Image 1: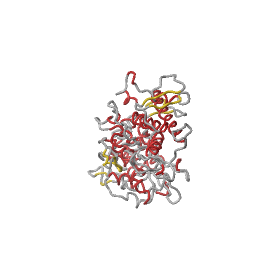
Image 2: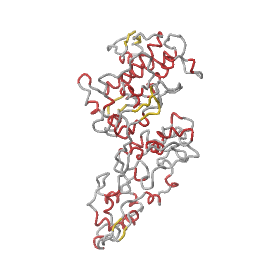
Image 3: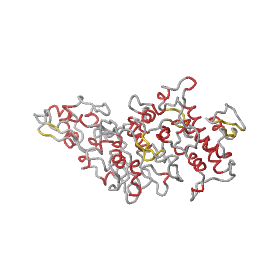
Image 4: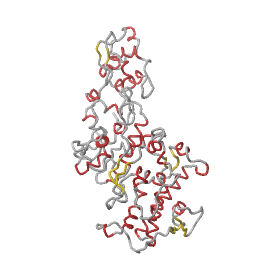
Length: 491
């Protein structure tokens, strides 16, 4: 079985299955005899064919089962999964199939990776979450009535970072977020709240750390992390209070409805006021923290400068009315929702389409209409501006010290503003969608960092070589076709 096979909801519909022998032998003999599984289920099919559809696919359950490996490979007949007490003669049939029944045939040894990972030899993560009770494992992803087709959102999930089990020994950059380290060790337990299903559920359920100390397997982020049950209703975890502070005060984000589930892991682990670090203080993919920067102050905000959000900035309010919140509205409302991708890119990484175009169109129109080409311009400008900032730090574009400014083994030697510029230079790589999440905030952070590095004075202007960096120049307001030095003013 492949976990990317079709996802299923509650198997309540299977109550219609009776045991073999239901009905007369005449009716049964009229059905073509196929496998032994079919013969054992023929009585059930003779009564229930055509009168119950799958809540997942909309197809007839009896038709689905006949096409599945449970029938074609003599796997399991109706009675093997649905036990009976006298049905149909006044008795009842047990319809709530438990995954323990699946395990009688589909053992850990037979399934192997990626369902179960060998923790002793690899950091590769596994699909099965040890925190899920018996009865909710296999059927999160498999439909026992039809193992031949795929539900798209489940395939999308398996192709996403949340479902990836990839592990490349010795190459952390080629390993998935679920396999980067051994999240089960005590030193990584705090990480497990975002890198494993069990850790995430323990954290969001209010359980105290350790979250994974008794769990010996890395895990993907499974369905049960975000969903309550097979009805796929999202879990309600409420507004998030973050693990870092601003001006020594706790940070609680607005209630982002369903998107609170995303903010648990995408609201960063630090900000510009956090202890100095060689890595980005906000950690990886801190998109929610960028979106709600007025609360998190994610970047290094230079003293005396204004980072108040623009009055017309409303990305942080998207989806609040319908209960989706901004993350779900933009990343999960289009087709292929469980890839969580908001754009389509070509082989060169160029944005060719916006998957959630309808969401953009609800606010952006006329000269402000958002197109794939416009979004690509923004992305290119943002990344190129980050390149300029890094060039100033490296002194390949001469900075005010005429010397490279790097984070060293003794970071105390860096001035506050130098460290701040270094932190802000990491923004484009750690939140590559920052140009969309909070455009003016990231633009000001990068502008101010360059403004300081060019002459150690915040004079509100920077000079950009528009011939070498045309995208950055345009991002900072240069008219189309500008070449040579362009003087940009603070956004």
